[in-house]
Amino acid sequence: MKMFVCIDDTDNYDSIGTGELLENMMGEAAIKGLSKAGFTVRYQLYIHDDIPYTSHNSSMCCSAETGDREVFTEFCEKYLEENSADGSDPGLCILTDDSSFDYSALIEFGKRAQCEVLTKSDAYKAAEGFGDGLHLSEHGGTGGGIIGALAGAALRAGKEEGRIKGKIQPLPNKSEWTLSEFASVFGVQRFIDEDGNEITDNLSIRFVHPTKLLYSKGLITGVIVNENGQFMPKPKIKKNKEKKQ
Amino acid sequence: MTDWIKENGRSIFRGGRNSFADAVRIAEECGLFSEDCEDELVCDDEVSCYNCRYRRWTEKSFECIKR
Image (cartoon, rainbow over all chains, first blue to last red):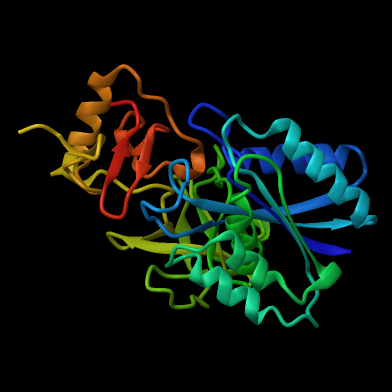
């Protein structure tokens, strides 16, 4: 059975982040033979003083497959209770990945979580009607993490754009690539420019800086920039333009 | 002028989200800088308040939770 797994509000300022905890949880589940995880997508949720996020209010959601959802769910619940940071408010969402599902009510909730302050009751209301297709549970503190957990799973189910966790490193002995080579080696399914326009030409690119991939339109997407006439994958982080002046 | 605006007991960075040089200077002088996880780094200076796990983003800037 395919599913989306999302956790939120599991950290404090001195603990590992929620994304790392999710990867650890899914790694342990894989070792136990409970599931096999795909990649993780980071979604930025609303930044507002009334939301008790730790530092950036992002939500991490991975795709996964399991043979026994009940056992997998019990494992995740126990894992969160044993491994979430002191003072955190963990929430868990496991949402069935089924193309026949109508996720529209959930997607609307996810989009609202990116621009307004929501409550736990908003989350439970949005989750109504999904029955066994959706598991939503609180695991300590206020349990407010269910809001971000549901939002992350919903946005992922809706193929909304987010950043894929982790980065791609250049290879030591190869800097010149074509897009088709890059796609084949790193599993990229689509390329866009910085304005979001699709790139269909098999451009020659120079890959010398780490880059991050996007999840966009349901596909693993690389962003290609043109710097002084040279095409390249968009460098991972913002350049400090002030210092270069 | 101080780098911080005091708001209800919180210290909000006066420079907003794009004062890279100031964020580096403060972090280098701070002694409490601790790099956030890779997915939350935002600039190519390793030591910068913008990359610190103790910054809490606000709509227009960030709060330093160690001040």
